[in-house]
Every structure is written in C-alpha cells, then in structure tokens.
Image (cartoon, rainbow, N blue to C red; front, top):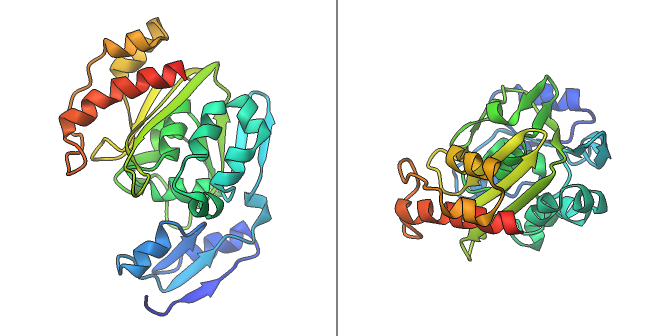
Length: 262
C-alpha cells in the first residue's frame, strides 16, 4: 500500500467537503476498500473515515418504515430485535454476509456505495423498494443502482441512511461461493407497499436487477409453485468457473421459490 493522508471528520458536511477533493476516498467499514488498496487496485491520496459520525449509526422503526443509518454494521442489523420483527428477511440477510469480522466491520452504507455485483444488501434494497438517503437528496432504489460498481451518487455525496418500507411478506435466499461467501446467485422477494418485487444479485454481469417474470407470477400467486413455472433468460448473466449463465438462470426461480417459502 502507498502512503496516504487520513482524516476523521467531525460532521457529515465536513466529510462531504473532504470527499470532493481529488483522489479522496470515503472509508466506512473498509471491507472492500482496504483489500483493493492492498492489491493496488485503489490508490487514494486521502482516506476519509466516517467511523466517528454517530449521526450515521442506529436503527429506528416508525410509520411502517425501518430506517437504518449508513454506518450501522451488518452485525447490528442482524441482531436488532426491531428489524427481526419488522423485516425478518432483512435481518437474516445481514446475519449471513461474509464472516463475523466482515459483519462487525462492514456497514450498509459502505456496501451500497461500493455496489459489488455479488453483494447481498443491493438485493434487499431493490427487492424491498427502499429509499437511499444522502447528504443531498433521497434516491429510490430503482434509480440508485446504475451498473457494475456504479451508483447514482455524485462526487462528495454520502449515504446517510436507508429507509425500508415494511412488507407484508418477504424472503431471502442465496447460493453462496463457499470461500468468499459472496452470492453466486442471491434472490430477495417481497410483497408490500412497493408492490411485488424480486431482486437478484450475483447473477447479472451489470450487478443487481429485478426479474419481471417472477414478479408477475408472484403477484398472481405468492407460492413456490408460481416461481417454478417462470423462466429466466440467461442473456446478460455471468458465466465463470463457478457456474454458467444457464446455470444461474435456472437457479434464480429455484431460489425465489425457496425465499417465498422462507
């Protein structure tokens, strides 16, 4: 790793100002950025650590919405009795991200800003029709994810929280790569204020995406059988040593059916 400056801003405004500098990087939990730096894939001149910003941490439930601060760790989400009660599938997802070290350091905001194509949280955000709040605006899930490691965030724009509407039904299933524990295919399903939604991570070459055929099937009949009758195209899906595009396409309705059953 090369030398770099390190700062811990005292406010979100100060962090956003620092992040606007040339070749500055925000560090949340560091579970994606630091490995990239060790491999020489990222070489920021300045790291801006958000760890001291208490305003970005915590979970509230009110008015049918679960709001999670951007610097809340995966472990905290998984352990939250409020999340377990309101959206059990979200707590389950958080509790199976990576390993214990990752869950105790990684944050929801960091995961979403990085938008790894096999990360779990993007599936929950898109699958529940959540809203991503920043220091500048609020962004609907359908508008937030723009492609591989790409989001709608502007330079100097920081995620501050994520609001999840509480669904009537929701489920999550992932077929993981056993070494990395990333999703080869992960499927989040929900039915609630944002309608019937099915979001897939790990399978798409461009990152997380929705599956209209499964959404239509589940809107008519919320059952594993409805998922079994749906066909997902292998076009634009990943194909690698872990599985072909056709294999991933076949897995998607299977995992969706399991998610529906719970």
